Length: 303
Length: 289
Image 1 (tube, each protein chain N blue to C red):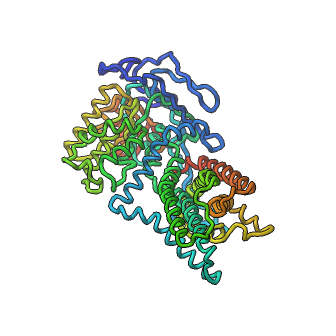
Image 2: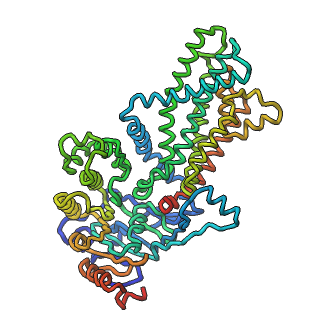
């Protein structure tokens, strides 16, 4: 057997050129040390990005048209909801019909983006069982990869929205919907807030799905009810007095209300909406990260 | 063969006095620079839910009846202490449930210790299962990239090795760009094995991975393992193929029900282990372990 520096076979012992020392110890308070965790998460981000890209490639490898359904599905759903809403209101108004359609359209696109992050993220750990059992990496990379994939599916809906509004405006030129407005500069912030909140929630549901395998099924129904409770099919201004509280206890409420104000009203989101978005981003990330990292150790034995 | 409960240093090398420093949770930790792996008093315990259907519906039903969740505590590894110097080729033998795979996963950082500590000096590559991260709908080339990224390589690193990996896997012409679902199981195993051994880790952890492919590829895999051994990298192998342990390893350990039962020259360990498998009871000198 080897003496330090050389082995019995005569070859010189290969030691790391620069010492790379890793220490594995019991997790304090059940959570791994956060700073090294975030550092490793950042170093391995290419894996999550490629995993998202390859998952998309695998799904639509033999059906280029299949990818179009990612836009067509929420588009048709928006049209169905538009018909339902206008029927319930007793018919469409020439001046407000297009803005109602535009509101439902951007609302559905945004809500679907959040829903995809949450539902795909919820299944990411159970679906990535072999990776969990055989490779060491921050497990949060798997729900993050689902979020990246959801973004890839979301962004084509933005030009679709503008195309629908442009065509609509050709028929109803008097409808006031902003197409080029400075307030659109708030849109990336709102989309980022929605994505981060949804990612934080996906961390919670991903853990729940490890313990209770029907969580993802339950999410299908929950998100449908969540959609009806969000300002997608109705305007945020329809809530008055203490009812406005419903807007803020909904994690996606302030973001979707801000979406309405920027995209349909062409105004800056209210301060309350900014605060609501900020609070939900912080709460979803703090609770999601703690819950996820404190249970990460269990994944390898419960998958 | 040596039996002992204290820290075991594998091999005959003289311990180095040069210490490398690292940060642990409770301050600085040091490890002699000749060690690749130091395992200190490692125990791994976990609880598993014994209910067959782990659903929210069942949990609510159980709670409404006032029933508790039935959990079982598994002590997979019990107080193992071990020093593995750089350049060692260590074989681990033991029956099913001995804790071999859990020990490997903890060295790889997949399962954190319940108590104790593992210090690893070097880049680790694992081959604990074949085709980890592979997607059957994607081509061999895409899967090589995905497998390499999953193993911790950068995209540039793995792309520069793709052709070399494809050549090692002996794929028929054009198959590298075909979906992996069209591969035979042997071809699939060969690509997966080729991805893992194409890396140049300081420490390679192998769990029953030498069984990929046909007899010719097994021979090729074995030769590649020999190359890695000749390069004097640290390798830890778990295998039920005892001939592999005897041929490749310079030290072996025997694990039984989570405990490190014995360590020493592979031939002697394998012999003792085979006797145990024949008789079904531990040798009298090991019964109190």
